[in-house]
Length: 264
Ligand SMILES: [Zn+2]
Image (spheres, rainbow, N blue to C red):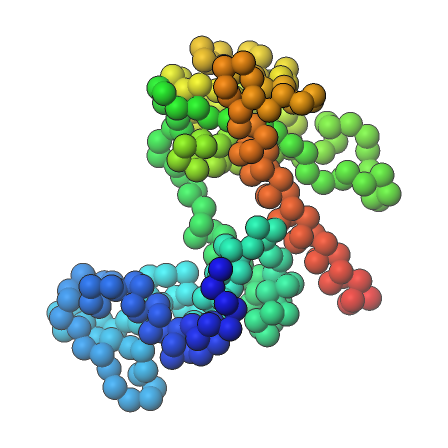
């Protein structure tokens, strides 16, 4: 993990140089027309600006990125991206606001843009395929404390998340569902996972009617981490993915709650 006091996180000129070097390792090119004949503009007010010699448009290293049209300095963006991606527990907007010295509103906007950039909103292809395995698992979010104001017993009163993970490629997709029923889960499976895939799940009834010809189950309770055919990974990937995402969500909520307390 890069030190948090590295120059690109603390100094604006170093941050811009760092971003330019990683964005254009083979030389600057125009994000509007792709031309490589560009001129770095001089003068204090034009620091970091380029002009394209072909289309005459001006641009900076922020153009066409999540940082475009933002007044937050580049070094704060880089530090925020580093914190949001390198921290296993995730980071709330409130924590970013404190660490970066920017307003809560800016921190929220920034975190939202970074998360959006990391997502793949419309995956074009299905996961898995012949010779691949995809693990499916589900968990409940929210309303788990009996002391919570609107606590109601039972899974049907909690929001669910269904997660699909391909351990070979690292691809993961998560879906918020109102209630986890076989019908809901099967619809998610069949719109995201190729038919020839080996589906790996726990012994939940939800997956019994999934219809996948290759379906391996690993015991959820008990001590089975590897089933007789060597399918091992429910403990290490899809569950870990859900655990991390749940912790990230809890971290955000905890900070939101403490924020509210401070405000009172
Ligand atoms: Zn151009």
